[in-house]
Length: 184
Image (cartoon, rainbow, N blue to C red; front, side):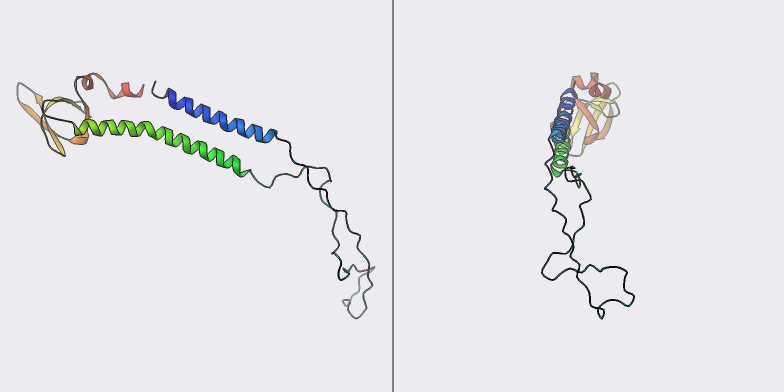
């Protein structure tokens, strides 16, 4: 029962992320800007003194000063959609935000449980019934800041000392519940 709320949050977060990703993919891609018309290179004769030693067969293309350099034709068709250069950053940010939200939500229950345990251990006093993490049941005789003295057997006056952190539960209900019951 305890994990039902956590599972609901996880499912809703994943659904939200998937819905946003699907809507982003469904959006039409913007049309690319029209490609500039290819520029026809102008042929300018090169004087022989400037030409390299073995002159190439045919005319040499040299840009005319003051004009643009000759360009090549575009590699994609004019109406083709250009593939994206990488993943969209907003999608990454949404996924990261979802993971952070789930991490915070999961840690919340653990912090509540830890605060409840600290309060229980700080309120131990003489006469309380306790259960240790080893399953030993007894009554508190003396409570010091770091250790607890517990009377385990009334007839033989058996006493045991426990570290304060080794106490699992306080009261009559602590005796009847097992750690396995907390996991269900």
